[in-house]
Figure 1: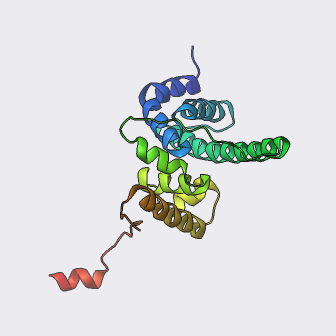
Figure 2 (figure 1 turned 120 degrees about the vertical axis):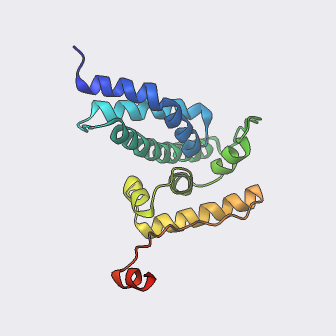
Length: 183
């Protein structure tokens, strides 16, 4: 008989894999790295001590792991590129792959952002995380999340020729006096 976590893992992969893959593609700005990120994050989520009560909890954990791993991988690649350049005594050349699929311009624009800017923009604008949730997911302060998101959107606007601005959502609740005045 399969253990609960195995059933949950199977359900997450069956029901949420495509969404996780799309999320990883946006966060990493690389279709080639996205599958590896999803697989590594699933392994990390289900081989560790984390226990999930639902598919939604497991998916949220995997999404956070994807963002964290993408940032770490980007840092590692930058470190390796600097070391190779130093060892070779010349500047590194970056291979650019032209992708003609819909949304490729957005993926290329996201690739130009720093890893933290990219993660903040994707979580805030595309995954609809709050500032607090994004800060918790990435281990940043709320102010840093706001700054990375603002800077990332400004750079995306410049690259894509758009004019969007970060939207801060504030829940408004009526106070008892406002309710009485409406009557």
